[in-house]
Image 1 (tube, one colour):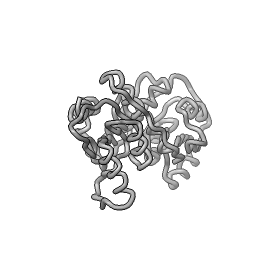
Image 2 (cartoon, rainbow, N blue to C red; image 1 turned 90 degrees about the horizontal axis):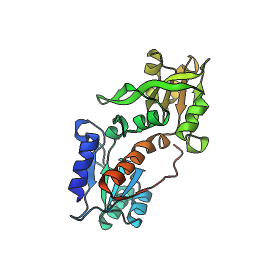
Image 3 (cartoon, rainbow, N blue to C red; image 1 turned 120 degrees about the vertical axis):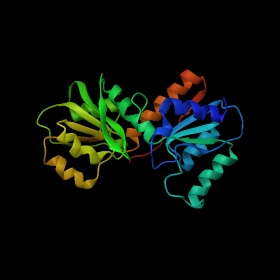
Length: 251
């Protein structure tokens, strides 16, 4: 399989082209017309992950946060160094942003729902016209701390909890990354809590004043789920060697 074949596989799996996005999704940097044998996975395409992916012998680095977004950025400074490292390593960069939040099976939010044991969940929240999150019922009532533990959120990953609930949590909304703006909508829909990465400061007062909870696992930690799921898909369905590049991010 070459890079174009890899791209076609990802398009079919994640329906990438159907999303309007701030990210330039898909191939962001090409490699030569070689056979793809190893794929690295990371949340972010920073110089560290690009370097480690190159050192691991990977032919492609698959990320959630790429390096090309809506606005054109001059190829100088750290942006130049990232691009230079990928090109001189003959390693492709493949980014999938909103489609990897929204996918009903492999996405960040669906994977968190599955990790919590939720048997069914419905679309919730939207960004740029696409539904990106999910809402549903937990398999049994839980505390905020129990939810955080199951999802692997901790103070070392950026965990922050605002919980003004009088009872345990039964129904939740899940929106990875900067999904805290959806807290008010989740409350208005009668849900008990929002699980997200981070939350704007101005929303905190609303949460504190209502019978509601927000579990913030950290932006980075809430978005490891999708790339980890796609790593397993590539291993199983394409038979390629893979590596996951953990990052030291408390955000």
